[in-house]
Each structure stands twice: as C-alpha cells, then as structure tokens.
Image 1 (tube, one colour):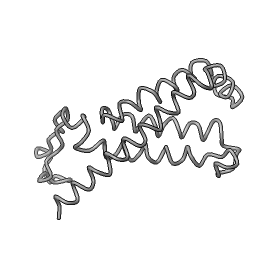
Image 2: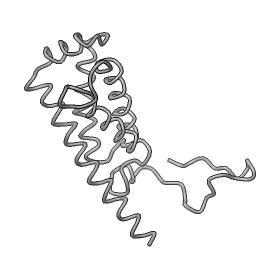
Image 3: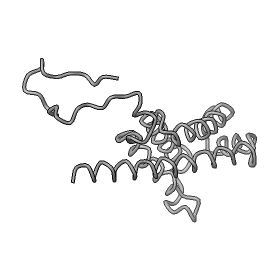
Image 4: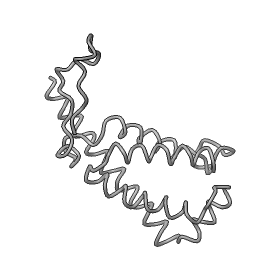
Length: 157
C-alpha cells in the first residue's frame, strides 16, 4: 500500500509540475512577446507596484525560467516559494480592492497559484523530477522528533 501511495504521489506531482510549468511559461511568453514589456510596466504602474520597470522584467523572467525549471523538476521547492510569494504580493498590492472572482478581474487565479506554490514548496517535485537526482531525502525510519538532541541529523544534500 505504501508503494502504491508513493507512486500515486509521484504521478500527481509530475502532472502538477508539467501543468503549472506550462502555464507559467505560456503566461511569461505572452507577457513578453504578445502583450509586451511596456504593457506589463503600465499594468504594474497602474496597480501602484514600486519600480514597475524592474518588476515587469522580474515577473516575466520568473514565469519563463521558473516554468521551465518546474517542467523538469529542478528547484521545485524554490520555484514554489517564488510562486507563493509573487502571487500573495499581487493579491496584496494589485488586487486587494477587487472582487474574488476572476470573471470580475479578481484575485481567484492568484490565490490558486499561491496555494499551488505552497504545495510545491512543501512537497517538491517528486521522484520524477531532476531534483531527486541531487537531493537525498531524509530516511523514513528517522523519527520526526528525537528524544535526544544528539540523535538529530541534518538532511544531507
């Protein structure tokens, strides 16, 4: 049963990584090539985001590079943190006065991406991601709480 659950978890993480990675790359590409940097700067400036020129490039760069890394499962925890942080900031800075519903230009989509970011930050990319080649997970036999401080070993990378 444990093996089946591990396989299911890896399949879910793989499908989630590919889907969200493709969404990030598609959105970044659209902002860069279709809408244009100027439009992104204007959107950020109208929202009152500080340094809209720099932030537009950072957001687009994160979506493109982060999306590709997520597709391959590289830096999944870090990309998840970035997704959560970026979308929480978008909600707080740009959409706080708007409705929740996306049909009304609300922050529903950003809330979903923030939660998905927390998901990747917590669970990583799974054994099908390239992260798994570089990071050795903590053994399941180790207790979560040790009785003696000497028993605590840091996770090896």
